[in-house]
Length: 321
Image (spheres, rainbow, N blue to C red):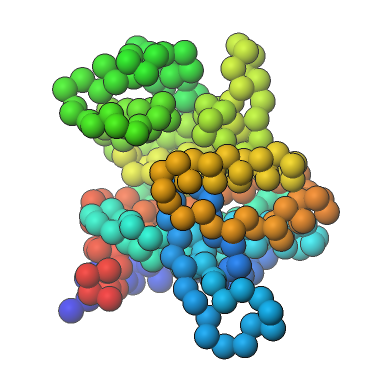
């Protein structure tokens, strides 16, 4: 039996059509990029599937990695002059299966040349609101700084609070501290103390993340001597829908971030995937100034149907695959 109802499958088809009409009207090009890559995602918090190719490789490595996002390939297209583009397709993440996660899921990712992340917030919210309108719903957008969110809700400054203060802010939640970093404590506060209190009928965009959570985003000074990442996360109620960046253009800095990821992975005993040298070459060649965002389509459908189970929006979830 399917894990999703016919109505949920129909809604997914409607959303897919809406996405394509939305970007066609805005002259954003739909593209398709490889699901298998020579390089994997180095992010210490994301695990990639790997596979071994058995055919002729003409000297290339047989090991391939299933993409966790189309980001690197899309940026290579941007550097080649393709312009505004998007991809709607399946991505894969190892170790992520459960109530809200499935090892393969649908991601929508797009890039806007000449935009920053703040402008992209508005377009992302516009797309989500268009999807909600399919069910006769709407949601107002609120933008808040990461620092203000923690201060107003928990009474702490996430940039200056000690690890002990972060742990204390979790209250009676019992967490084994072994191996946890400062960013892990901040993430636990987000998921366990902050997200559950988000307005269930509202869209919330969080901006100005700590520099330690920059991933592939640019950094700037927040005016108070703290470097912040020019990125945003968009939530509908307590469900995180999208993660966007004012994209980093510096190949040297990007290589250094990949290397730092590798050090963290080695310390944990995790596999260190090969660095995507083609992405670094593209950055060196000249990635245009741009902003990009990845939106989880399954998460959007969950929020639209107000269900906490990703299985309810998949034809066949991991258990039924």
